[in-house]
Length: 131
Image 1 (cartoon, rainbow, N blue to C red):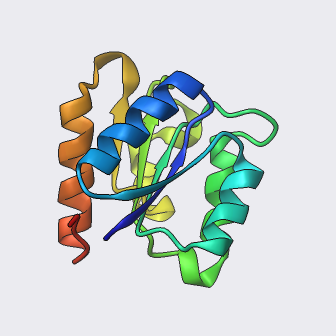
Image 2 (spheres, helix red, strand yellow):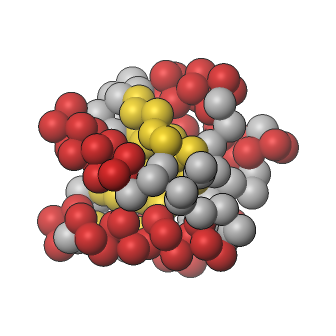
Image 3 (spheres, rainbow, N blue to C red):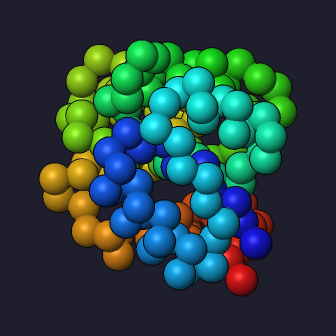
């Protein structure tokens, strides 16, 4: 069973994503802060990270750079699911390869089924699948 680390500060969205992913056969660790996400990843290395950029204390970009600084986490696929427009600043699509971002979902226009399809696509291409 693939394990997903969900970094989502919104409690309602976190519950929705978690339950939908679990119904699709994944195990999920939902964290609301960057520090909790790092701790969670250290305890249970994820097969995929779903990241909201707008998180408290340390923002998602800081989390992403810290996460990628650990050699054992450098190749873990990461999908961004955010309210932040993908073409701004550090989220410019040109930087996605450097940061190893597997995809980007802009929340205002992303349907839950589209997100679940992306999760399946990324994990299937990485050789990890749901039950």
